[in-house]
Image 1 (tube, helix red, strand yellow):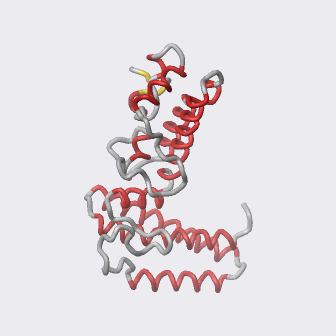
Image 2: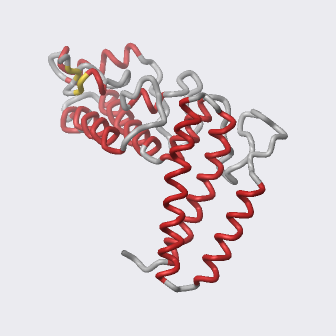
Length: 231
């Protein structure tokens, strides 16, 4: 199997250099710098490079992009790439090579953090498709897609209100909070599956609405966990 710096073709990233084809990692970085004059953005902002809407998927070798991913496959790709980009391999490299390899390592971390979280992954994919869901409220239209069309199902709002009331009523009752947490976990699991089905069918409207639901369920989960004792 052809290898690229210890990375199999299945996990090859367009930004990870083919180290084995060079005498020293520094030569691979210098070649990459010649090919890519602009280093991909590695900031934490979710507004990714418009020229490559699926950049984070490609970084981890997921091409074509897909919603159905496992944490195990993402972790394998991340660890393999980070091994390739380990600072020890660039201890004698010039500053620009060290900086570029560090930027790539940061980008790998960012890709992993985004794609391993179903909610972040869904929002990232929708944004890439021009149907972004506003981060602040879980509703709205980042790119003007479907303006004037409410994403919030009144039934969902009622469910959220009732769940929050139940959380308040539970107070410090660990048993009741645990029950609410388990119920919410089940709802999240169903929601994630629904997003996957919608994404596979390229039904962006359904995917957006389910992503809004998942946003609220995620907040409910966090609210419950804040009330539960540690551990």
